[in-house]
Amino acid sequence: MTTPRRRTLSKRRLGIGLALAPLVAAGGWIAYSHLALDRAVALPPALPGPRDEIDSPAGRLSYYRTDETAGVPLLLVHSINAAANAYEVRPLYMHYRTRRPVYAIDLPGFGFSERSDRTYTPRLMTDAIHAMVEAIRARHGGGAVDAVALSLSAEYLARAAVERPQDYRSLGLVSPTGFDARLSGSGPDQSTRGSDTARSIVAQPLWGRPLYDLLVSRPSMRFFLEKTWGSAEIDEGLFAYDQASAHQPGAEHAPFSFLSGHLFPADITRVYARLERPVWMVHGTRGDFVDYRHVDDVRAKPNWTVAVLPTGAFPHFERLADVTARYDAFLAGLGG
Image (cartoon, rainbow, N blue to C red; front, side, top):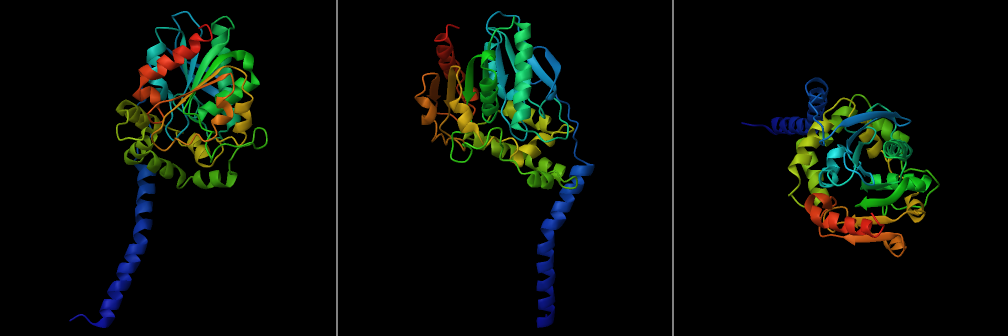
């Protein structure tokens, strides 16, 4: 017969067990991450064609190129997230590679570019774009380039074009950030939303990499890609490549700066307003990235063309023909 005292002790033990369960699970994951998880998964090229590297003020940069065809060079810049890489621009790269010279960069901290332990900032990313454009122009007689960037990287491309407008014939912004209620802003020049304290917490050696490993686990990555697409019909090739790219030595360092806000400019509203070159922008209407309440601030400007498609935040994966037709029409108006 169970006495009240024994029932009380059993409840206490159960309560203690339930309280400790999350700590045990966390400890188990930390041990698994540090001791058993493979962080040297083979990483094939994200794109066809030669892959070259250059040294730059932003560190060693890797890029893909296909430049056998004449024409105005096109630079493609992937987005910023926990597992970003040049595969994100693959549909555009594959479409244009037989039509004109095309280049695709791995930004610092991603893909085959340098993934050293440092604070990653808009200044670093902008300097990487400057270096890449300088190298492209040197290969093609010094002429201006067209450039297309995705999501948060559109903010870095915009800053690069404000600083060196002569380098660009036009800009393409695919689902650019900085037009929503949360990330628009007119803060001090070069300011960011970063917190050194937040970065030091997420980058703590004991739990930093396990936290990142959890963030890029297969269920978590699929969840975030479905939020990007606004659908369960994500691109499986991108998912697979992201998995490989995220399981590389040093893959956590740039995402730590992303998570702590250091990669988000606080002055982007003023940067967009200062753009002089022709700008083509496209965004979708589905998923978690559809707040463009401030786009009217630039829509009426004569150098801006804004298109909207019924897609998620990566419209070039879903409706490539529509994206390229609209982009080509925009370029035709420039005489290219």
